[in-house]
Amino acid sequence: MEYAIETFSLTKIFSDWWGRDRVYAVDDLNLQIRYNEVFGLLGPNGSGKTTTLKMLLGLLYPTKGKTLCLGGDVANPKISARIGFMPEESYLYRYLNARETLDFYGRLFGLPSKLRKMRIEALLDMVGLKAVANRPIGTFSKGMARRIALAQALINDPDLLMLDEPTTGLDPIGTRQIKDLILHLAKRGKTVLLCSHLLADVEDVCDRIAILYGGKIQSEGKVKELLQQTNKKQIITDYISDTALDKIKQIVRDEQADCVITSPMDKLETFFIRTVTTAQQLSSPTSGAISTTKIGHFLAPQAHPENILDELVSTSVSPEVPSKPPTTKQVIPAETPEPKPDEQLLSKLTEQAGPPESKPVVGTKPVEPQVSRKEDVKKSILDSLTGHSSTQKAGGEQTDKPQAGDSGNA
Image 1 (cartoon, one colour):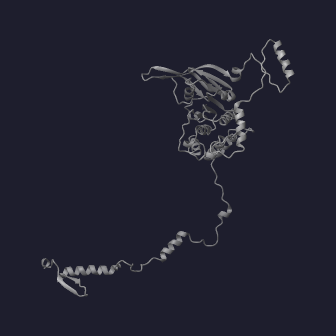
Image 2 (spheres, one colour):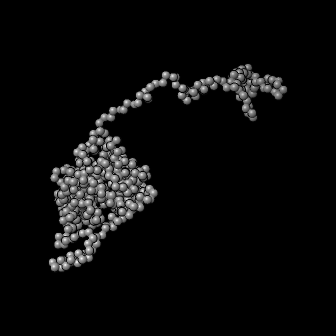
Image 3 (cartoon, helix red, strand yellow):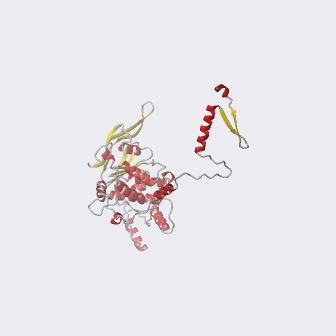
């Protein structure tokens, strides 16, 4: 349990169609990452960074060697539930909105409903997407998709976080926000494995780095130790007079060393963020992602020894006792309640029930009553039995004449 991530002779070989070894993506990699450490895995394209991450996550099987994450096998659900992963490409459901996406991943981790809703709102606020939480993911820009991908990697409050190119597609403010978040996660005791091509970002947040080339580690160590130039010295002072500067130059020449005196410069990133922050205070709200420095309270460092997250989890899994409704809702009125709309309609229909009035409609022939129709049927049957049929003349006289089939019947 000394290391959060440990690999033993990790090797991955990709073969061709005939099964012959062609590409050594990772070659005999031995890596140790301590707990509560921000570790940077660097290297050019094709150096084996993403392949290493996939083998650590169990998405690829190594050709040789073994990996351990959080002291166990990542295939164990108890281990994988403590890991968060942000891939290089965000594979998200484009027809779900941001809130539904986080709810989906929260359900995969089996988070209780109350805890899941609390984290979703906190993460949306943290990554600056709360204003567009109801927009489908397919309408997001690449930078906004990276923000929601980071939020889904943090939905389970992981102990180990693996980030593959987390700042790709982000604007400078979003990049700064991700770096601040990584530092906050380290303060909270989490372990972060970071892969990136942007060396300035890695330099700002990582404790140790390893540079890969050809699937092998070429250099490894603490960032300060690797970058520090021990054969040179740097002095930074407030403003001093030209006379003092001449004296300093003379002292350096007496030591037979070169001396270059210049004014320190701000980083372009710092200047950019300061300018945009000033402009944001005067402009109207944007329809895209909002730059914010908020950190989810369940990710922030604790100010007291009690763990708020543990308290929330224990509260959510305990059986919920239904709250007693107010007494005003339990009082039954003494008066007889008014009939419901359905009862009024039923009584109205009942009152109107009965034989309809026979009123002829203009332009139509009145319908004969059912009784007269039956009498006609009976009379026609009687005539057929007696062999006569009665026809009505225009003047109202009736003439009896034999039917066509009377001779046959006789």
